[in-house]
Image (cartoon, rainbow, N blue to C red; front, side):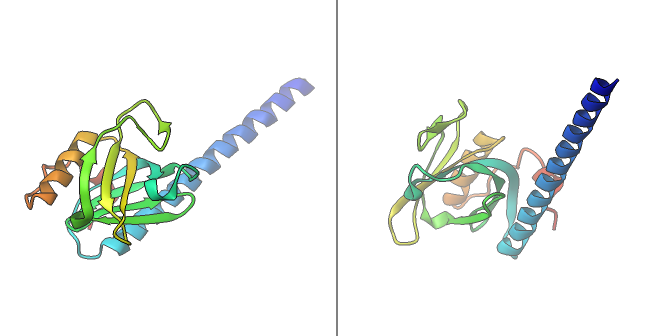
Length: 164
């Protein structure tokens, strides 16, 4: 009987932890989306997706990789990372290349990534990479915008969380 009570208490504790972490993640995501709303202002938003950030080349190998939200607008790529709270903006006119490597800075999830090579703030070459659900769309959309064309329709409507 005592063993059953202990098992029940442990299971309830684990369930409470899971509920807390789900709530906390949703809160972090909502805050990141709100930050994006403020950052993009009146820019035209083509797509917003959850993503996994693989780092920034200029920051070297020892940096956090983590979840966030990635947005493509008529001015460029906006990124907000959940933890640590980090933001990045890559203007369209600074993007030099888009590629789809399977790893970046020695990190891999055995899937192709969206790698964006660009000219950084001080005129130096830099790059970032993200794991995104609709990789092909991102590659085609950024290429279209860089060429002065409209990007293809997004695969879905902004995950339902970035409506204006």
